[in-house]
Image (tube, rainbow, N blue to C red; front, side):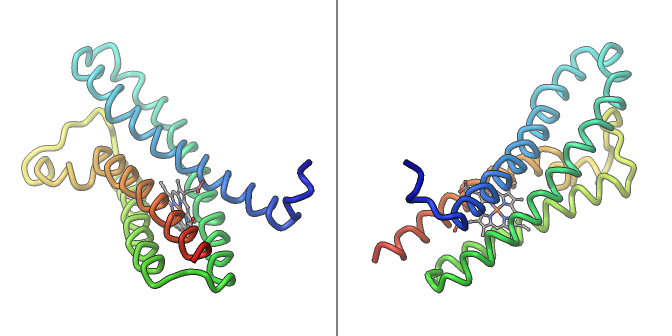
Length: 163
Ligand code: HEM
């Protein structure tokens, strides 16, 4: 029944699956922090703040595993597409934008770690103004855009095989 799927295709199927699961875990986890925990913390600071540090350290591990999985599988997916000779110029342009946004997201993770980011601390002054660009909201926003670009990549690729 599954004889139509070659061994190599099964491998790429699992690589694609791991890439997508890593992306969902990372962006989903960040969305939970930004849109659930933050508002709840604002409404009940005394109740939620003591929980943020232990939650943050486990969230950190989830992000580490996801980012490593995304990078390894993303590189494999990219080379798999490139060796097929079916990638169009538009595919390369969209992949370039996707990679640039992915690098920005990796930078955000690094930035959170460097500044020993404490989710319970409120930024002030210029940091407050910049915080949207470098905070969890940005991570979720860029992540959602990257998901859209991934769908565009797939459609571009399927169209170039069909034509
Ligand atoms: C090192 C960075 C990355 C590389 C090299 C990379 C590369 C790729 C490639 C080549 C594809 C296949 C595109 C196609 O179908 O033609 C893909 C799919 C995808 N990427 Fe990435 N990516 C990276 C980072 C990310 C990040 C940060 C996210 C989201 C947070 C992400 C989410 C996705 C999703 C959801 C898919 C679609 C998977 C599917 O079709 O089931 N990628 N990626």
